[in-house]
Length: 266
Image 1 (tube, rainbow, N blue to C red):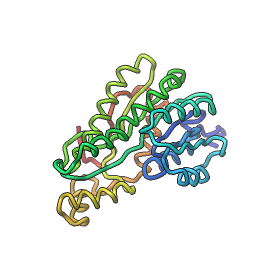
Image 2: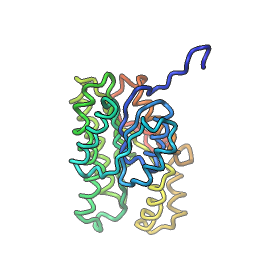
Image 3: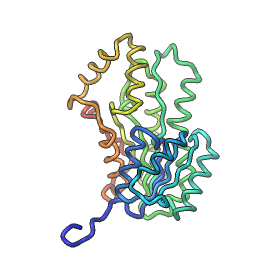
Image 4: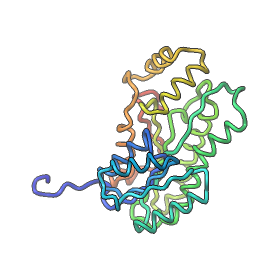
């Protein structure tokens, strides 16, 4: 209670889909959305991890739906969105967080590498937006949040396929903001820098190997590019997602917002 008045949760009565929800940033977003009162449809390829997360969340079990599936499968995306809308009465927020990373020199990258990264990081978002669109149109405050990256804002050695996919996702965000604005659907991207997640450990291993550096030297060089001098915590990214999903962000669309400790200023 606050001065005799009940504390209002920012996402109370909202229905949110979060992809890539079983670990890292997606897991932290699920926890943060749950604390703010949202009903959740959580999507990931790992069923056991989703089941464990469902039990951990501060929500009634009836307010959490888990869907083990791959966003590369358009048919599965269509079924998941409809199932979510049928269960909870609609969809208010779509968070496209599913993503994969790969580090190689450009000449080592195969066409298949590019196709796999685009399939998950971009086409997965395309599938989920198209699957959710008719339900978002019916929401009083519809939101689409795409998890991009600072890699979508600059060039990097040894991750051309990953960077290309994140540039594409930011471009998609801007186009959808223009197309969907007439339906009051806001579309924004979050651009994390280095975040303490399992993907960061993969990056330290693969990127340092591609660069011919030790993991310690790579990590030290990475920290040197961050004015705050540290990597971000997953909860710091989740808080931005909660903000963008809330009524406080009703006038924000078409933006790609950095949560990166100051790595990128544009």
